[in-house]
Length: 395
Image (cartoon, rainbow, N blue to C red):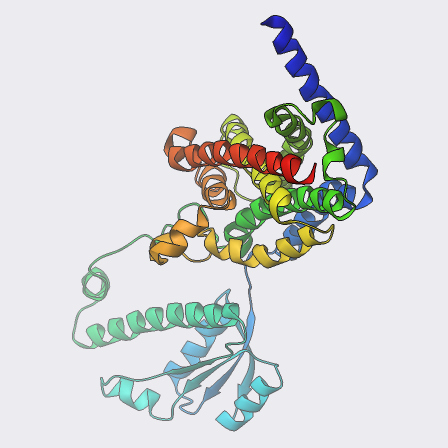
């Protein structure tokens, strides 16, 4: 029994050693594993370093020119989201400024604005947004809404004052319920805190998938698919070969994954609320599942060295949307929700966001954690079966 176990471990070590040599002898694989996994996270974090868009340039068309309109313009300019860069004399002038991309939104105060307020009627303010970017719309709408709410309170206080109500009594009439706006897990509402955790998980997923696919494609393209198996093991059980190859990728990618999903986010002050040991325990089945998934896919479908890169390009955008980071999975059709769990990236993104951004423990993400272990087990079986297929029909 001990002799058999020793022989099996020796077989796994031989496969592991051969796979390490293959990794470090292939420049493209080295580039993907050790350069892309560092460069991409750093580039993404640097691009979105500012978190939020501030001082969006806007134009104001004030046809009323009353005290109330001037007060509103002052409040608009005081918001952190928008900045009044131009005070246009007409809508035509403001529209030309928007066409020239000098402003991204227009606030239009009509001629009867002050008169309607004085007569205690409903006044209207027009907001026109540049929809070429969601952030232009978000800033103009958020900043404008906050100003309008505050201005409504001011006008109501003035009206209650005219009716003889002042001080605390008027305040209670204007705002009978006071609410606190608390943004959980992302207090600043920053884009990078929302966007980058999912993207970093996909960087790890896709680079590992590419590297394994490139190595499988190189073996198939040059008709050396069986050369990645040591000669004395080609007639033996495939699980030792699969474990030996997987051990190579796991030992390479555990440090890389910690760099991408723990160290770099800390450098750029992204949310890291979870415990490091919970993150480590979660990343182990994630790397295992991606490794065996990549080996299965590479054995069955990748026939050329560049095919792995093309498959990654095909899957990347789809995986990002299926992960639930952009659009909640609860709002997806049942088919696409089930389809997304073919890929380890789906539970990987969900679990990582809950650990890093929400401070969840493994017990609180047990669904994602167990899903990754199930995927790792299933894809280990398919990797062994696909390797057996190669041995039988190409050997």
